[in-house]
Amino acid sequence: MSFEEYKGVYVFAQQVDHEITGVSFELIGKGKELAADLGTDVTAILIGSGVRDLADELAAYGADKVIVIDDPAAEIYTTEVYAHAVYSVIQKYKPEIVLYGATAIGRDLAPRVSARVHTGLTADCTKLEIDPETKNLRMTRPAFGGNIMATIVCPDFRPQMATVRPGVMQKIEKIEGAKANVEEYNPGFEKNNKYVEVLEVIKKVNETVDIQDAKILVSGGRGVGSPENFKLLYDLADAIGGTVSSSRACVDAGWVEKSLQVGQTGKTVRPHVYFAIGISGAIQHLAGMEESDIIIAINKDETAPIFNVADYGIVGDLNKVVPELTKMIKAMKA
Image (tube, rainbow, N blue to C red):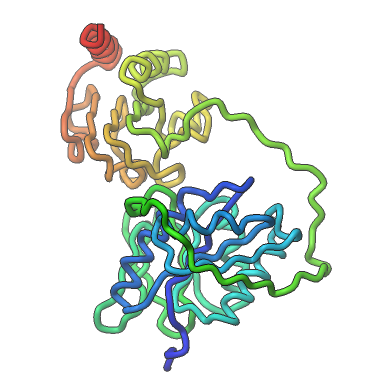
């Protein structure tokens, strides 16, 4: 089957409240690598109302072209409006690959578009590469609870589509002063029986740093023992200028909020330093943090799998080790 008319790597550039989501820049960075292997370029799809001025920011992170769909109907994300917009772009421009962030919006939008286009979709990818022989996109994601990694291809339909978890790919160094090659396009929006009316948007006030943006993470697992013991982690984080995160077990137990969860069903993080405290190191957790620059494990079980990926390990009672570590850090800063 010939797909010669399908060209280019396209990235859905998600914006909310006039701010582009970080995973969009990460996907453009990865898209540049894929495009280089295919001898093509990267195009960002920017949808919203009054968003044209965001195009240069996409160019600064590597987008060769930006297709802007600017319409009052797209001011707030709704499934029908955005699915129609992306579907129309695919029909008109025929991209070979389309990538989405695996955010709440991306997870809603991508399957709708894939069904309309009649193509496949691989969700929650952790690796993307071009097969040197077939030039198909090889999409790798955890399967069977993270116990194996499955590589999936879509040889018979185009475009090839994937969602990618935030924090997995790396954005390029920002190109200051970049100007976007903008193409404005509007497919027309007519209300139909799939339109929903947004009556009110209620924003949750979040006073904590997003763990995906943190340079230092102090992460606790089941071994911390109780929600009260998390104070030890917060004290260490305050002393070292870090942010507290956790494993799924602590979230399931109600000790911390879901927004702090690292792992396959949480967030993928890539801090400079990752403290794994009382975390055994199940493969589902490792999938979310093993790309950290430096991993420091504190666990009383010397056979815990976390020590296999740790750069530094301390075998001992965290109730004694963590306060002592905090004390030493404070003394060094004094």
